[in-house]
Image (cartoon, one colour):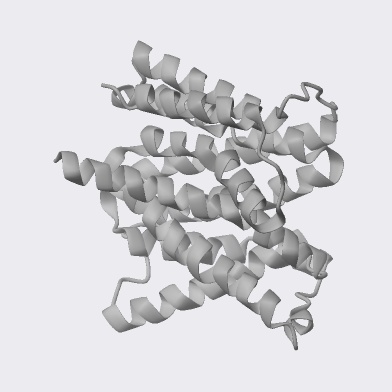
Length: 294
């Protein structure tokens, strides 16, 4: 059991590490001329096609058992897909990246509180609360990086909080979904409804700029990584880890997101690592250890 539990934690950490790297790859695509909405849509199209082929091969079901469960899948696709990404990317158009990262990476606090309201068995004990708050403090230290100045922007900060709340709702909805359906089916539905709910956006702002990939193998590989690895494999692994460990414990791994982002930025973009990063990382590690204590 201990070895299995370690595997579940290792999978959750690996997913967050990969998601942390996506900020770097997304930035390269943004510099190449894509918009955030186009990047999200293209990576979800790739992910959905991959899962669609797999489901056709394995004969996995197409619809949920009831229209209520189908609405549940739609809620997952909107909260964890289109609305989350649009809110997060929209926030960066109105406020600083620091504000956006800080607010969005604190979503485990929102998720723990929201899930605790609906599921008594998922409520944190005192040790876990201390660990969660310690990890949140570590995120603040890492993101602020010694510059404790926040530039308030009502629109941008509100959008960042919306993104944060979306991920909390996604974590909440995954509990009943995981109880009744397998991970592949749920993940395929997330991609499908995530794409379906983007249609109104592209009616207002048409175009995917696919022509930008012609003669640009580096950009093509970046997009394939986001679609095949960061979307398909990571969403499957994340939803599977939620089924095994519970939504609250797995969502706490989001605290590692800024740590992995900075490490990839240091490795790929040669951005410096500071003492604040090291201090914040230690707080996150200790906090994560305490948050898993029962």
